[in-house]
Length: 94
Image 1 (spheres, one colour):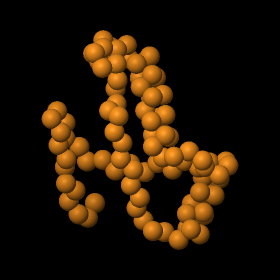
Image 2 (cartoon, rainbow, N blue to C red; image 1 turned 90 degrees about the vertical axis):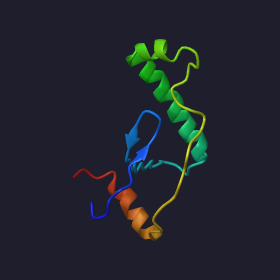
Image 3 (cartoon, rainbow, N blue to C red; image 1 turned 180 degrees about the vertical axis):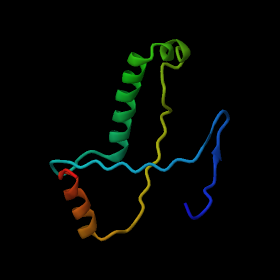
Image 4 (cartoon, rainbow, N blue to C red; image 1 turned 60 degrees about the vertical axis):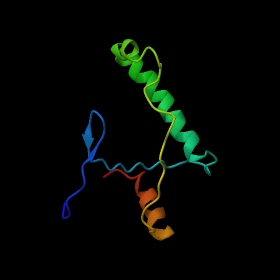
């Protein structure tokens, strides 16, 4: 890492996080990013509560693990040919 990354802090945490998720669809996508994120949050919340029952007792008042907010941003500006090649490579074993 050439440049020093800024450490972000919250009330009870400190973090530096960069996540790159690529969802490759089989058919033309017709789902808004916010609907996809909310669906992932709902499924992950249910799975986490099943796997870790203490979460249910800890968050019993709100019955939620995630806030209703989300952030979506775009980066890059790569030509479509590069993006297409990247996606096509996802189906090939290393």
